[in-house]
Amino acid sequence: MHLRKAKLMFFYVRYPSSAILKMYFPDIKFNKNNTAQLVKWFSNFREFYYIQMEKYARQAISEGVKSADEIQVANDSELIRVLNLHYNRNNHIEVPDHFRFVVEQTLREFFKSIILNKDQEQSWKKAIYKVIARLDDNVPEYFKSPNFLEQLE
Image (cartoon, rainbow, N blue to C red):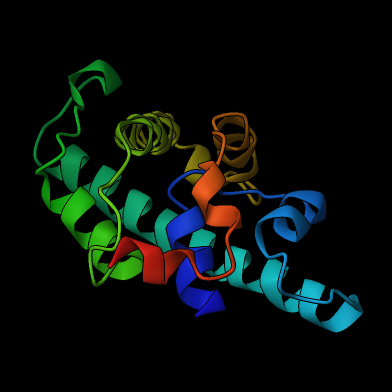
């Protein structure tokens, strides 16, 4: 249940602080180990997310897209569908509009970096991560409820 909740939170925050995690998982008695586990989950969520972004950015380049401004992500796009399937398999929540915006911005950042051959550099993704971290949004209040998934059904 906690993993599912964390995956749904990813639609709002990609880089939650431990304070945020503690606020939204009030039923957990936090210690070093379970805090590390939650942080690791988000790290894994980001890894999947960024792999998809790089894949779709390279695909856009191979399809002849010349400018990042040409890249637009619609709510019914294949990329949103893939991400929704991964984080929200049972469609517990509707994909937030802000997430579509974050996906579009991430895709554009990957596109620009690859076009400029920055992907040849050692830590080329770090600059992208910093941009995306600033796009985190507020998680809805109802996520604070320990049994919020049951309330959605």
